[in-house]
Length: 357
Image 1 (tube, rainbow, N blue to C red):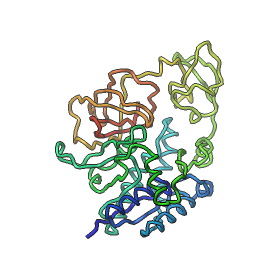
Image 2: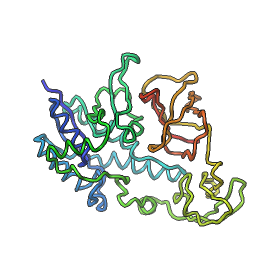
Image 3: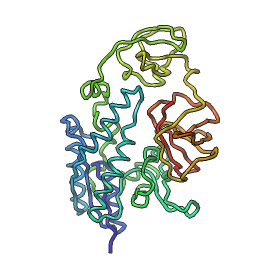
Image 4: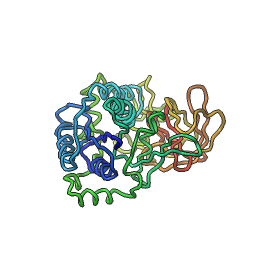
């Protein structure tokens, strides 16, 4: 009897080719698009992953592949676990990554649960990552793909470890996106040349500041821009308008370039300083998820990635109370509260968590 797999189809080329490959491999494939947001602007965005155009593209590909296709409503789950989280993190003066929250609470928990309820054995997505059973660790593990800079294991660190055996990543062994597009073209998939979606799906114009003002009680609030000694250098119109490491758009002049170092939420201050002040050797990570081990009760040597586009850096980690302390071999630039720190042992994801200090 064929194994049944539900493929999360975003209407893009990656998930479309993932569905094609699984069917070729003999799986009983069902295509599903998650309806997660209903704002008109999102629905009409050509390259978004959750609007009407995405549904149309995914349905068209499913028809080409001759597989069943459904749209499942996850609007409430998305609002609670992604939108509310996104807003709350900015209220706390942190910079969130909503895609990571969506992966955990909508894709892996909500979609997988519904998929298992309808008799599926697996769910699959078009992420560039890999799962496999490790004889060395006696468990299912999450690994980097062969895609180099396109690898997406960083955004998948919070998959519950007991779900890894139910997740398939058909694109794991491909080295670049051109190979995926070529497969789509050879099979006449309508999305072969569809551009990648790069913005947050519910902020299709990239203007997250406007989104926050329109969808929360966060409003522009004038405050001071100060240096690390507390000297006032200028004014700002809302902490959420700034990110760690930002240099342009500060509206202040100085004899040497200044960068955003952090925020004092209690005083409504943006703190700036010279570039050398951006570097940190230690961080604290909370809300962590361990995949490769059950505990970290002694110092472990790992490699750490602190943002999607950054390179890994060597470090040691240790669990302290309910957090993980990270000590880098070399200071790291512009580490941002609210972003994820992901720990690797060679090409295996040990786990990850949210940077809080």
